[in-house]
Every structure is written in C-alpha cells, then in structure tokens.
Length: 100
Image 1 (tube, rainbow, N blue to C red):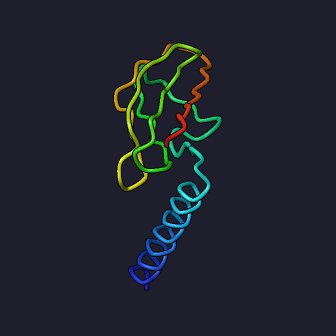
Image 2: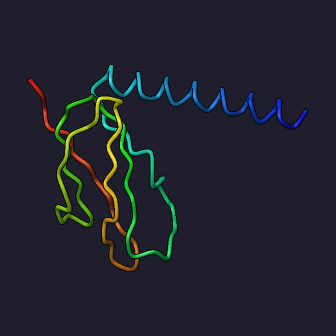
Image 3: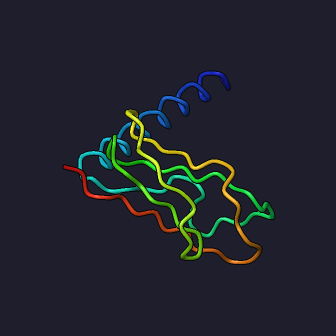
C-alpha cells in the first residue's frame, strides 16, 4: 500500500513539474525552483535552479552582484551550481534576456 502511495505521489510531482515547465516556457517567464523564497541555510555555497524558455540567456545576481550567466537547457532548466553567498539575508534575482 505504501509503495502505491509513493508511486502516485511521484507521478503527481512529475505532472506538476511538467505543467510548471510548460507554463514557464509558454509565457517566457523565469521561475526560481530552488532555493524557495524564505529558505534558510547555514551553507556558504548554494545551487540555484531556474525554469525558463530553452536557449534563453540568464544572468544570476546575489545581493546585486552578478554571479554568472548561462543559457537555459533544452529541458527548460538551468542550474547555477556552487554559487558563493555571504552570511545573512540575501536577495537572488535572475534576469532572462529577450531572445529573437
């Protein structure tokens, strides 16, 4: 019974992720999947995962400082890995450039 519930939850999560990726790609928005708003960590390096329109250029900022640029993968995701962050509260905006 527990295995059945886990499989159902797994399928629901996958369906929701597909819907999220479709919506983000269709509307050309950039959605931050991780870290979630209000997340708390004691780490000084984090991974930022974004969903957006494939092949879009994205710039990541930490407290106003540019920490990297990259393109959204064909699957609609982009990971900025091992990004150094200061102690204390931080603001993590990401900006997607317009594509032609």
